[in-house]
Length: 103
Image 1 (cartoon, rainbow, N blue to C red):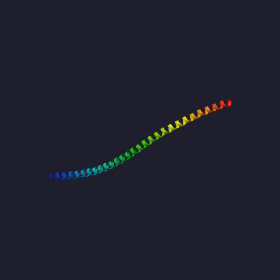
Image 2 (image 1 turned 45 degrees about the vertical axis):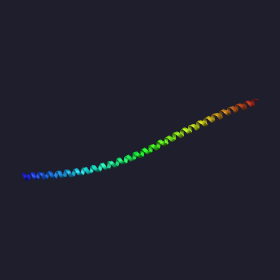
Image 3 (image 1 turned 90 degrees about the vertical axis):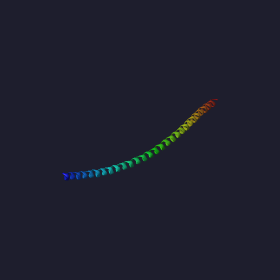
Image 4 (image 1 turned 30 degrees about the vertical axis):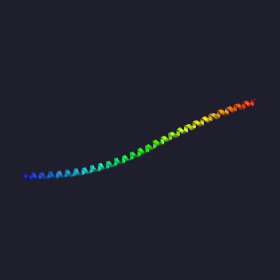
């Protein structure tokens, strides 16, 4: 009876040892996975920072383009007004020429 109990204890001890070894390996695998996940998250954070920098540059460029377009619009309006004034003066000169020609 004592011998059987000792044998069962030895078997149980071996099983416990095997379970502890297996658990240790799983913990090592878990640590590896956590390390890889941490590296991936760090890389993602760096890429997000790069994206934020690029978006800020795009926003600045869009503002500059908007300002430039407003200036171009003002210049085109000025040219249009000058063209209309020139056309009006040409009509006045043409009318004056016809009037002089009739006299």
